[in-house]
Amino acid sequence: MNGGAGKRKLSSLVAVKFPVDTVKKLRRTEGVGSVFQETQHFSTITTVNGPKRIFYGKRSARVFWILVVFAIFIFLIYQIVIVLIYFFSKPTLSQISFIANEGGMEFPAITICNLNPVKSSFIKKLNSTGDLNDDVLNYLLATKTNSMYMYNNVDIGSLEQGHNLSMEYLRNHPDLQIVDFLNSAQFDCDELFETCYFGGKRFNCCEFMTQSTTSLGKCWEINLQNGSELWMQKSQRISPKAGLQIVANARHAEQFTSFHYSSFQENGFRYFIHPPQVSPDLESEGITVSPSRIVNSAIKAILHDLLNRDNWGNCTSTWPDDYITDLPYSSSVCQALCVANHFEKLCECIPYSYNINNKPDVCFPFEEVSCMKEKMTKIDENGTTSLDLPFCADCHLACQKTSYISYTSYGDGFNNSSMTWLMNVTGYKANYIKENIAIINIHFMELFYTSYSQVKNTSIWSILNQIFGLNGLWFGMSVVSLTELILYLTKVSWLAVSRRRRKHLFDKQMSEKRKEKILEAAVQENEESKSRRSSVANLRGLDEDDDEDFWYRNPHPFSDSSLDDVIQLAIDFDKTGRLSSKSLADIVEEDEDVKSLNSMNSNCELILRL
Image 1 (cartoon, one colour):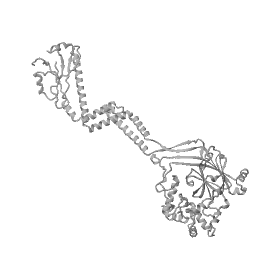
Image 2: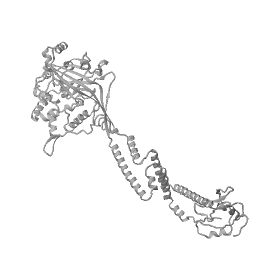
Image 3: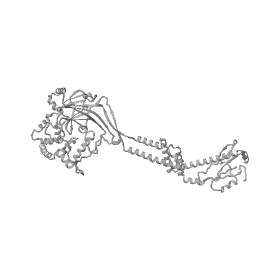
Image 4: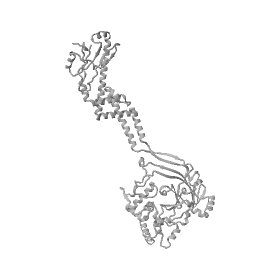
């Protein structure tokens, strides 16, 4: 070889082929390589159990871990589906709480009805013309008898006869309205109640009573909350003497004994314990007491707090659209209005027992029973006839409801001291008291409310907690693991749509491979140099310059690839004998021997000067 100033002689050449074809193939599959790179990175750093064992596993081990992870994943999905199905079923549960009110319990309203449908003095006044006979009076009074009782027990023929007579009587007395007749035929407040006591203190009953119309007709409601006396509004003790006591007069002598259609077998009173401003006979159970008896009702207050439809429940606090009333919503009143609307649609009248709004178009007994038999009966497969009333699906439970459970005991007759006391209070004789007077005692059994609350059995946070718990159990996932998984899926999805991202990862991958190859070559050369350290001095003498080095260069750079600026490594021995690397950009061209290498193939050659 011919040498010159700044030229170097090559004592020997060693050519190492660089895989150019492989690089070009890799460029064509840069997307797959990018996904592989992201997956490798994710498998290395993630805390999720499984991906690392699958990615770095060998053959059978990889298959084994794939099957294990797949089976665990299927079981995890199955459990998550069960949890979600349970969540979307909107489960609820009931909680029981005991609420004690400071200062005592608010006393409920009491509605008292006389079972005598009409007083004889009213009949005498009404029959001033002498054309009101017992058949007409019985028929008119039967208007407020329960519809089911009339349907199952009366003879339609006798009803028709009474109907014809009554219609003739009403034509002769056009000023008589049936609703007004039924509401005014019974007793006034001062006729029924002799005196009242609360907490042992006497007061006038009628000052706290208002008229109330129920299916029993004209009744009287006492509500101590309407009074101005604070000591009457709350009960602070559970003794019978601390409650309400009512001395009632049945007025047995005024009873109409010829009434045939009564659904009650006793005389006396029927009272209802209920919250204020509700329909008494529909919202509470009735308790009956006859004259010459003492009834004691120990009551417990029950609160119901249910969930509405927006909170997984089925209750409501509003009336359906076609229900018009001034009463607060309750399911029992709603059902009564539903039946009333059904009768009004089919029979063009409303039974008195369902006439919550006191409409004037009340059904007479014959009209009511005839309509029920003709338009409301159905026959099943066995030939059984039954009454077909509406289901009233719109009448859901009320969301908030207060009710009172009573534990009732009776005493028959008055002892001598009680009889003396009653004679002094009422001014009546003993025989009259035995025939007419009844005593009603009502008091609280306990000074707290029992609250039944419907609550959600689960929540979105509880469901997420269960799902994360299952992920932690089967895959060891935490919030950090989930974040890693989301980032990995995001990056892979980004690779599918972003060409720039794919190119960036490909260039990064190729750069790392170049660095690895350079490092491998440097390490290999270092190992070889260790075996030749004894001849370092001889190697330095072979070069005409003072710059002794071992170097690599690329005689055939890739002009159409990302490897145009391949770094060339020069291994240099300094004074201390350590290896160093530098760029060969400033090394002058070799002589003709080096240029002759341009005729070789397109693979890079590693040129070593020894």
